[in-house]
Every structure is written in C-alpha cells, then in structure tokens.
Amino acid sequence: MRFLNGAELRDFIKERQAKQVRALRQSWRVFPKLVIFYSSKSPVTETYMQLKEKYGEDILIEVERRKVDVELMKEEIRKANLDENVHGIIVQLPLENESGEKLSKNETEAILSEISKEKDVDGLNGGDFVPATAQAINWLLAGYNISLEGKKVAVVGQGRLVGAPLSKMLEKSGVMVSKFDEFNSEEMVKTLKDFDVVITAVGKPGLITSEMLKSKAVVVDAGTASEGGEIKGDVSDEVRKNRKDLPITPIKGGVGPLTVASLIDNVIVAARKVANQKGQQDL
Image (cartoon, rainbow, N blue to C red; front, side):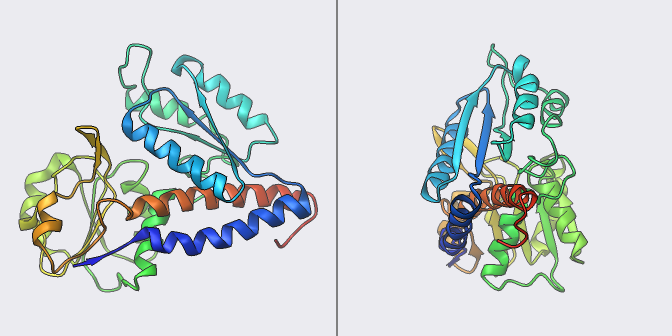
C-alpha cells in the first residue's frame, strides 16, 4: 500500500510560508492575522481549530478564535470585515444555536455570505481565493505525481466546502468528473468500481467499502466526522487493512495537513495584498 502523506508535503510548503511571513512582518510591518468564528465545540471543531492555531504559531501568523452566538455572528463578522488588522476570516462549521441544534443550510449560508470577498480565505463567496480543501487535494495529487489526464475521476459528496469547489476546479482544468453524493448511493455502489481516482468528502464513516474500488485505484479520503470521540473519514477501516494495492490517504495526515496549509496560504495572500497597497509589489 502506498500512503499519500500530506504531512510530508506540508512541511515544504510551511518552510516557504515562514519566509513570506517574516518578510511581511519585518520589511512591511504587516502582521498576518486569521479570525475563526465558531459557535460549538464538537471534537472535530476543536481539533481543527487547534491545528490552525498551532500552524499559525509555528510561522508567526496570529490565529484568534471568537466564540459567538449565531444570532450575533453576522454583526461580528461585519466588524471583522472592517478591521484592517484582520486579513482572513472563516466560520468553523457546523454552526449551532444555544439549544445545540445545527443551523439549516440556508441559515449557515446567510452567515457565511457576510464575510467580505477580500477576507474570505475559505473561498466560499466568489472571490479570488481557492477553497482550502479543494486546493489541498490538488496539491496532494501533484505532490505524488498523480496525473488525472485521461483518468476516470469520481468526486463523492458535493458540499460547499469540498466536493462542489473541487469538482468545479477539476472540470475547469479539463478533467472529466463524475459526481456522486450520499443520496444516490445505490448508483455509487454499482458504478464506483469503474473509476481510476476516487475522491470522497461526505462525512459519513464507512461509506466507501472495498468492493466499490477497482484494483490500484487512487483513493483520497477528505471526509470528516466524529464517531466515538474519534475523527473518521469516509473510507471504511477494512479498505486500508485489506487493500494493499491502493494508493490511499492515511487515516490521519492525508488531506488535513494540506488543508490547513492551503488556508494559511490564503491568509498570506490576503496580507500580501495589504503590503502591495503600501507600495511593495513583489514579496
């Protein structure tokens, strides 16, 4: 089995980013800052916020958490939009109200849409930023010299954060993509075995089983969910245990590390734009 280890690739990216941040701070007095708004503290939410904080700390980017009731979040996002010391804003999903109920898709969209395009480092509001996980998957495949040219590619899950933007990115680059989601699983079970590359981002543990995957298929598991206090992907545990022929992301250290790196990359880009406004055109 060949593991597609995003953590190894991340370290090269991180070294480059650290140099960029030093230049911003020392030469142009621009101090990159990311603000994370959140309303719940599930194990998955807590883990991802900690990863972002640690990454930022390592390369001198400030990452600030702000726990805000969902009723007040729009107003607080607007304030952060106007704060010149904040370069990136994200909302850590899922959002919950005071009763612990998850917000509906429309309610969540309304909050996310308040983030200005200039600071929307998750790339959700039609600005110039590439969505972090979609870019991470692109980096992962490129880092392991996995070409998608002429390949049959399946993207399972079409959520706003991963599946939909990834499908759009791949199609824009000329890749033929077949899209699946958890609601058409019967079709998926029957046809997924035809694909050379399977990228999954549903958040449903055990969704992808061994019999769904052809020999030597490339498998990228970007699904995240909490099960028994552990973070799980979409690919069943038995796949990694029994299918030694598959190039596949590990349970930990696959897409996740590169997603954080991609998000931070967008924060640096936003901060560089501020430096450009001060007269520096090429950092």
